Length: 124
Image (cartoon, rainbow, N blue to C red; front, side, top):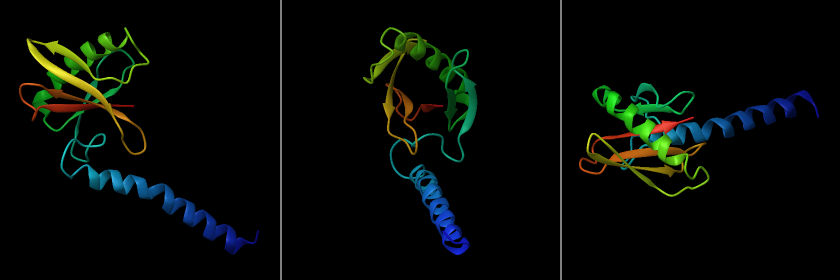
């Protein structure tokens, strides 16, 4: 393959690889839960030793989100291959955590059952 064709192929592949990232970023501002951390999401830490990253839109939610993530991890260990939603309680508040499709990877969204405005994501 000559240089021009090879260069065109590299550019086309690069554009194809960056397109899903742009889609994910624009989807993060749309309705519903974000597909992973939104550009304005706050990194809270990891929910357990070596676990997934916890992101929330409200820094004040970080301490609770880390506790919920730890409780989710403990509950998920009983059935690690299950994709079904899990409910956990932290401080008497029920949370629902479930796997959702993301771009390019799935993520876990946890939502406060009493206040759906409180939510966060767990990402790899």
